[in-house]
Length: 357
Figure 1 (cartoon, rainbow, N blue to C red):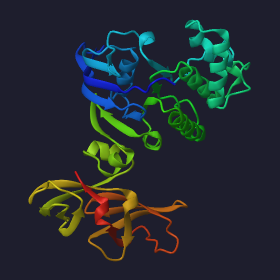
Figure 2 (figure 1 turned 90 degrees about the vertical axis):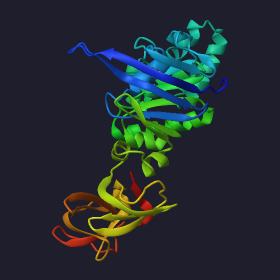
Figure 3 (figure 1 turned 120 degrees about the vertical axis):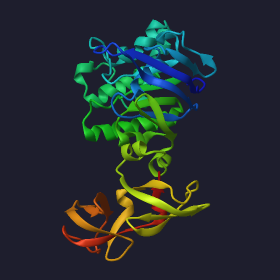
Figure 4 (figure 1 turned 45 degrees about the vertical axis):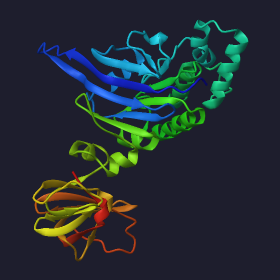
């Protein structure tokens, strides 16, 4: 593989026209970000957030209306897709149906007019990497969805791009195969050390494969961080609600100091750890992850259980606390008291697992 390359976007914007109203709107607005060489970065967000448009601008299929894109130290806005040191793995695989597996993977190398012996060596090595060796003569319509995805990945990797781009590559696969393939993609990326930019709307997919996650909403970047950072330290309510499940409670800050803040929720006083920047009187939102809360017979916040469901590995509760519905996933509940719907209970949680927005 060639030298690893990073990607840098400086104040990138893409403007489209709404066909119904004729008004211009930003699909991507003033986005600046840096993707380090050799990292696996995911663009994550709901439909229409701008993640695919951003990926297509990196690939060269769309041109930014404002800003500059760099691949390594090279500005690439003016370069067509085939002149950029990138390769794309598409959602639809985009395999050539009249070619067999070998010829699909070799297609780009043949266009470059490499010697036949070199093409064969590279293709066979890449098919072995994606565990498709021995299937060189198979036609693509004889392959399963997962096998087709592996061929598409091999075809992109055999070109030895500086950056590998993924446009929701697993969305056509069933749930079980998606988990298997995302693990394989991550293993291959780590093995060869290539820079990868991956688009998905699936939060669990992004969490499982990424070094960094870029969360987007309405054309703007909401937060950039590791999976742990965006999950445990969301910067705003959108991020907290989009990544995993979250409960929100209104609170008022009574006092604060470096590393902690005393707050009041529904008239009950408690301490939140690892937080700096609040001042007395601030109205804030608390983020409670369902797995960080348990029910107890005593505690700071009283509620009424409205739903209690056994889910095997956990007991799922919905609890009304001052008119707010709180979701709780009590993992491995064997040997602990189970609360029934209609019972009064208290929320029990570690102060270090509560976050202020």
